[in-house]
Length: 116
Figure 1 (tube, rainbow, N blue to C red):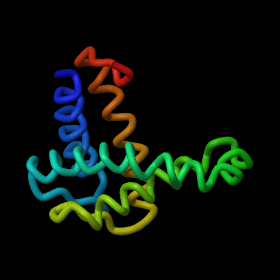
Figure 2 (figure 1 turned 135 degrees about the vertical axis):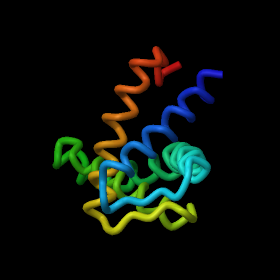
Figure 3 (figure 1 turned 90 degrees about the vertical axis):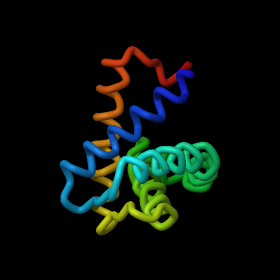
Figure 4 (figure 1 turned 120 degrees about the vertical axis):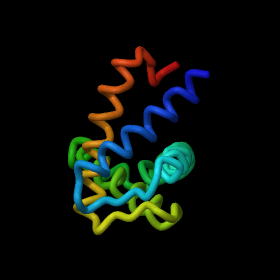
């Protein structure tokens, strides 16, 4: 049940983030919900592989390269989800950062723990 609540929070946060950033478009809440599911799957399957492949660069940059990996995940999601459009890498990077902040705030307000 907690996973479904976090999924809904992620979808709402994606809608809010897309509203704030002019370089990101989400057509509907249904698209945002699909985006939240796709991002969860990509973060589960693709992100660990990318982290492993870029481990030396991540260590040298003291973890800042993880921001680039997050932006790449957003760009992949943009190509997979119709109705979700990101205008470029910088917008994907900004979307990733703002989405993380908004999701964190909404999770704390809802009382959900992402580690549960």
